[in-house]
Length: 113
Length: 113
Image 1 (tube, rainbow over the protein chains, first blue to last red):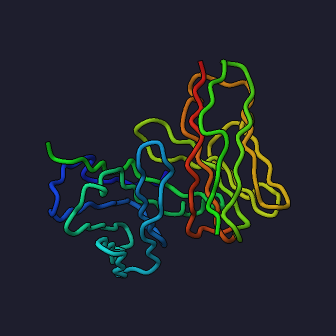
Image 2: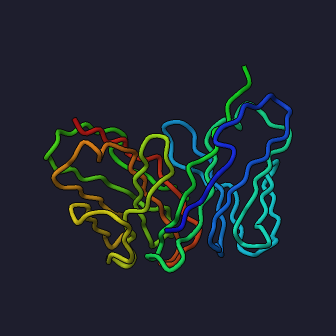
């Protein structure tokens, strides 16, 4: 079945650093969604992408819909402590049940010790 | 505008028991989806309700069932609880029955002992 592979699995950030993560699939997605989840909370929608090649920003966050429609990237500029959390990419399952979003396993951002 | 709210926030049940989780959708949203999130994983789609009917289902057994009410709120029922049902259960609401942006509640943490 369809899978979303996120990398890296985890990373450490120092305040002020830029952060990049990506999400890839062997199959095509028509929509890419990026969520952030804090401990004990539900995922919060950060950015939604609907067109191949689309580049969308939300404050310090920028996400891109890959041209091949098989990948997406999320960048965070000038990271701050509250950026810590787990970032998930998600997309609608092709040919799957209505409303079925497939999620990656997440990229965990932690503060550098 | 009120967001998605879920109750209860935490629950402990014994194997074999039944449980009902509740969700109020975001104001103006008519579609509710339920997800199961195991520790360290991304959310997995259980099913979706639109116009009070099941509108899509993931790979979950029939002992997972649901309801949607005229005010668009929803319930998730799980019968014959198993230890592996321990997870964070997330409710998401959206504007239509299709694959659009989904907004999540804070989740219900279910522990089966």
